[in-house]
Length: 420
Image 1 (tube, rainbow, N blue to C red):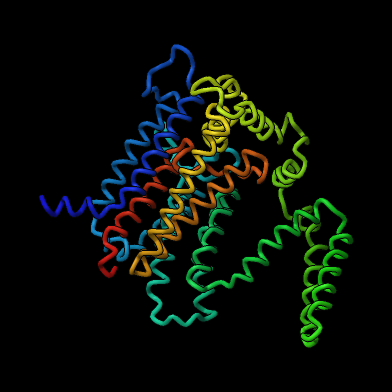
Image 2 (cartoon, rainbow, N blue to C red; image 1 turned 180 degrees about the vertical axis):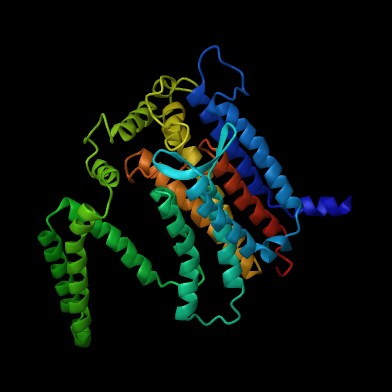
């Protein structure tokens, strides 16, 4: 009995409590999107909120099962789990069903299972196993390439399913590589700069962008005359940026699919195609704006009640938060979510083993990426790419995958004083 008490004491209660609060709050908002007067059967499987209750109960069983397992199981079978996950990604291409133009789902009775959600968990385990097995702390080009390959394999298989949004999520592992010293901060800055230049080039004439780059580089050289030897490097940098800027329009016109281009156009011009591609975003913004400071009240949102926002229980769940809980409620929710993410990072930093630290950072990075993109796209700051808000959006695959991530990390953290 005393061993059981010690076991539960080692589980980080703040993280567990935040997990429960967020899942409960998520269900409340899913209930709101499907609630109609006179319909009060909570386990109505024809409604998303009824199915979500089943998913939540199953998630709690999954979480409890993980906590009862030996922590060494995850270190011993990380690569096996990764291999099985990759096989399921291949399997869904052959045996899966197509939903919303993506072949990403297995049909299981009345429910659908999305293997790509679990592949994030498997990839997090694989990254943790990879970094923990490196004997020397010296970073080599070969080890960098192997780490990148671990990320690119599931990303490529998911792209084959025509699910760009989920594939993009795997870029969150860049944060993990940066934390472990495998990526320079300069490379991340250049990556963000490339995205910024891509957007600017779609708005302004490429010649204007190149002229602005030239002015900035000349100013830097003028302010650092003593480093005259570096002029050649600046000229090379200018040529690279110029080539990149001129290649943007080619990529946009010849590589991106029509619906992807339309989503970018909607992001850059929110008034475009309000009855088509821009409809979801426009209705989401109306819902959030109508909430005002204190919100319209639980179950009282008009946009939510009359189903004006498509996909509101999944991709656009934050619009329900904004409408019914208002600006004040949204801020409280964002604070709670950021507290949850911060707690993940704090726990990751206190780990004694590389495996546990890398896995913790992987979980935090994936959830942060989902959070940032999902909330951003519902308010018009990010393109609509169709990824859920973890623990909040409707969906069994998403909830179970994130439950596996969080509870596996809770288990690893509970054994942090042991060398895993």
